[in-house]
Amino acid sequence: MSLFFAIASVFAAHAGAETLSLDDALQLADQNAFAILIQKAAVEKQRQAVNQVSGTLGPTVSAGGVYTRNGTQSEVNFNGQNVIISPLQTGVATATVSLPIDITGNTHRLIRASKANLLAQRETLEADRSDTRHTVKGAYLAVLRAESQVKVAEEAIGNETERVRTTQAQFEHGTAAKLDVLTAQTQLSQSKSDLITAQNAVTLSKEALNNALARNIKTPVEVVDPTLPDAPADEDALDGMAQTQRPEARALLRTREALAQIRRATEQGQQPTLAAAVTYQRNIAAQGLGAQPAQ
Image (cartoon, rainbow, N blue to C red):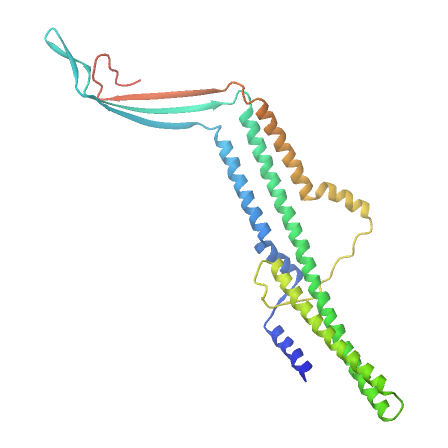
């Protein structure tokens, strides 16, 4: 009777569980996996770094002002007319527009390096997606294997139960020894223990699947048997394809390109720089000897 209630509780737990196909699980992992979300943030951070470096080539505008107040105003009298030498207060407003000229090409090298790093981060994101899909597929198939073990254990209990009944009947008719009955009962107890172990394995494998999907490990879930493609037979062709198409390999190539640009820029870091600038200065209420209203 206890076995009946145990199986009934399992079915009751499954009644409210979400049925998740392998494709659904992979889609959830792509949306929720921590590694993917972290790498997406790294991609966005590097994209902003590209904008920051690219902005150094554009013009810059600056504005400022200076207000000066002296203790006294200095004046001098020429032919009966007072001329201000140093006014009591002055105000000067300045606006400057400057444009850097990349005569050595270092700024463009740094921009190319930053863009190469951005491509490397994107390739790393694809690599993380691939690793996550691999982990989720493994966890998904582990649930299916564990559930298959439960079915095997349940069938074993049915067989052992029938064996106990048959052996007990044979013993009662004198065609079997008591030892045979005890052996059958022991095997039945072992099969029941195997069933409990298999059910625990199902619970643990489902928790591992939920963990791979970056959600509460206690979330009820059911899986369905997927249709998996046949594995290609030509391993050498697969190896060659992986060498050229794996995102990790492409990310390393982009990183090497970025480091080469940074090295060249560092080697020429002491080269002269050039910038063109235009400054407009306004002397507010210009006073004083030789004061100009604007420059």
